[in-house]
Length: 106
Image (tube, rainbow, N blue to C red; front, side, top):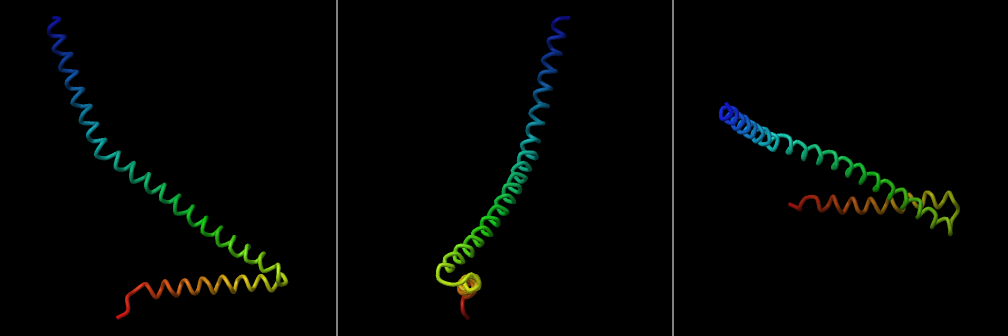
């Protein structure tokens, strides 16, 4: 009777090893790629939102800094519209140069 129980134990152990290997194989092929995709999506979204926020805060700091700098020489109203005019012109020039480089000339 002991040999029969030992054979059953070996068979059960072998079956569980095969089952465990099969489950691990399926998990490696399905779950891990999905986890990578989800992590990339989440971190990419946070990175994009963080970049947009940093860009907006930098724009605000540029306008505010130039406004305060121009306050040294002009009145408050003049320095406000002058800072908008100066930075708007600068962005217009940069945007025009980038649009010009967008496509080669025919």
